[in-house]
Image 1 (cartoon, rainbow, N blue to C red):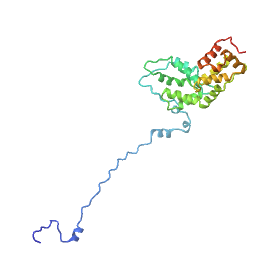
Image 2 (cartoon, rainbow, N blue to C red):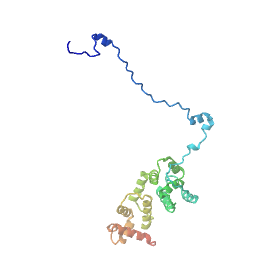
Image 3 (cartoon, rainbow, N blue to C red):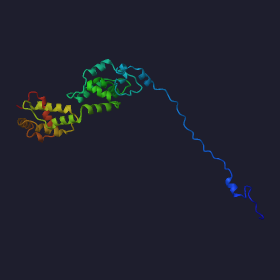
Length: 257
């Protein structure tokens, strides 16, 4: 064919073109991560292997509970032995007849007298609080590993040792208060205040507490307190009704008998 140039790789034998050896493509080898050398048995396993059967039953200080870790910052401080002794003088054991609110109140009053320069008051409280516990209460504190602030500690303490059932029982004493036959009005009022002090979170409004007190008085006492109110006790305001009762309490010679 005139005027047409064939390419240099032209061949007139197609079969030869098919049979022509092609370069072998070798895929890259996957680079496997270097395996870490197999380490020897941990030291703790080696120590266990050397123990006798008797030693496995001997208590260890590693198993002694030490309570939660407390972050005290960069300041080191020391709790005086005299302060610890004062806290230990009124311990809380976690018994059903103990008052968790009263214990916390006494503890906080004592802590308010302590000032350590450079140390937050809540840190001192958290470090000092376990010294005020014994028995079941102290065991509970050692198990609470999440306690790292005083706010968490006091909240968890009341939740554990002042449960909802106890709150409901004390609230019931307030709402269904009844004067005994041997009590005067001032004595009945003081007993009601003891119930309120034992459960300051009772959640009842003051008007309801005063009304419950009046309704719980004997017929004679209600007549006497109505007379002292100049008509009807329930017609007084909260402030005036409370002032009247407190005046009766302060008057040691007053009697409704």
